Image (tube, rainbow, N blue to C red):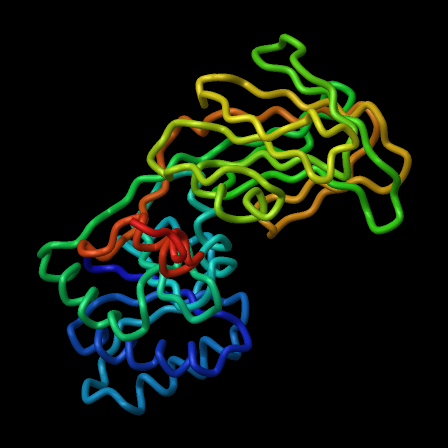
Amino acid sequence: MKKIGIIVKHRHPEAEKLAVKVGVFLAEKKYMLYFENENRMVSQRIYKSILKESESKKLNISIIKKRKIAQKADFIVVLGGDGTFLSIARLMDKQSVPIMGVNMGQLGFLTEIKKSEVFEMLALILSKKKFSITERSLLNVKLIRKGKTLFEGPIVNDAVISKGAIARIIGVKIGINKKWINMIRADGLIVSTPTGSTAYSLAAGGPIVEPNLSAIILSPICAHALTQRPLVLSDKYQISLSLTQCPGNVLLTLDGQDVIDLQKDDVVIIEKFKKHKLKSISHSKRDYYQLLHEKLNFGLHATV
């Protein structure tokens, strides 16, 4: 692992300061570092600070497009929250490199490494000692309008069909492997990966699903009928969602990052992303249930 990408949460001074420390630590060990040019002023400020604080004056640092970091780096360090993590993870459409998410935000399910653990984890990774890589399934989302594909790409957490601010209840026809199974009328529908089960889906009443399971979760948002409940399906199925009732503005939101306006009779096809899985670097002494305890107070009031 000679080439390392560093992604920093925007408008977060503490993340910038930590990026400088991480940059000095890695640059002095002669690693090639990549920062993204989405916010070039921040990256240049970090670069100048690394140059100022480093004892070495020959640093291998480049500021490039974020997508190119996903293609060039051997692994990536994300300093931010889950949104920052998702912004780079969703670019792993052609290849998958390990991501170490360092939590600079609030919840941090994806950015599970604590700030106090950063240099310990980097030392373990670079010395090839004990650390864990969790592989998480992705979903492929395709939007079809009048027979033409308008969008196609992977998601990490969820794809959400939802009404706009003033729209009425929408109708979505659900099919599995081209066979109709359900018709819901609701404020919207969340289709999530097991990784995304602890995100928007959970807030809408969906189940917690272990991230290593091969599943797709469908969670209605404020369904019109009480019989419409969350549904967990095998990710061997292809899910088709047809927008049959569209009384106003309806949106397709992907991982909370991209938003697309939908029209009546649009079809969204969702199935397992088959090229590869997302690789997330984890602390070897922390398991998924410990994360649930820390992040959600899961089982806090349970008695034995």
